[in-house]
Amino acid sequence: MTRTARRTRRPLQVAAGAAASLLALSACSSGSDSSAKPDSSGPGKLSGEVTVFAAASLKESFTTLGERFEKEHPGTKVTFSFGGSDSLAASITGGAPADVFASASPKTMKIVTDAGDASGTPATFVRNELEIATLPGNPGKISSLKDLTEAGLKVVLCDKEVPCGAAAQKALDASGLKLTPVSYEQDVKAALTKVELKEADAAVVYKTDVRAAGDKVRGVQFPESADAVNDYPIALLKDAPNTEAAKAFIALVRSAEGQKVLSGAGFLKP
Image (tube, rainbow, N blue to C red; front, side):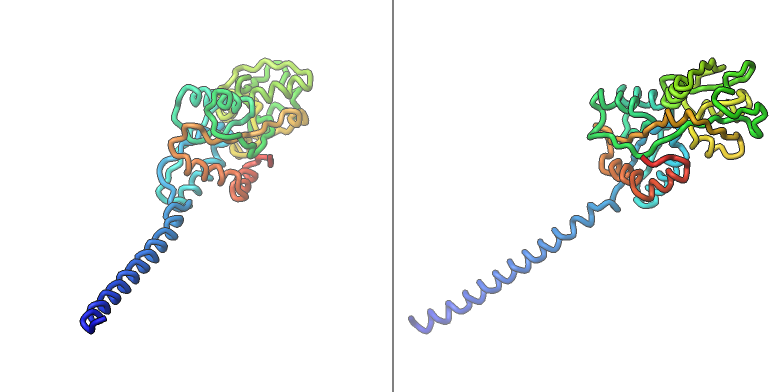
């Protein structure tokens, strides 16, 4: 080999080494970017609106949880539609856009699952028990479910298709009592409002609603309520517009933090 050839080969070897070094640096840089990606897609990066259809009895506790969710996930907004579970189920199967459904009974949740509008299996997250709501001071001296059948007493019940109405009817049937209310209301809050406005002497509602009403009403417990405890299931909806945020909200509801809020409102553990 000539001296000229040796001088030519050395620069080529140096150039090849430099190119290899650049490729190695590029690979390291690419690997570093890839490892950073999970942080950018983590739960803290949730955004957009989450629409939750929930039983009226969940209004106070879910509103609290919605505020916590928005605080924990800046850029999100939780919008609630509260009402009778049967009406909410009908809206969902009718095509109303929503991400989450929280029902006051398995029966009304089944309307949604049978229509194929739920994603996965609904999970029971709390239970609720009935109580009689009377006027402050209980002027009618109501002390039992049987007292509600007294002549001249204005009693309000939830509609029989609504979970609180179905539960009340179950309790009445268990005790062999017949009761004709002055009105049937479309959800538990509407029934309670009748008493708060003094348009009725009593209403059979949930224990949680009596607690939420504070001194506007007085609660009367009755043993037959143990025969009509309602399970509350929650489910992600099949066509949820914001699936990831919806899953995160359901996780909050079922978490220790969520259960603490619900227990504080008077709900029973599942």
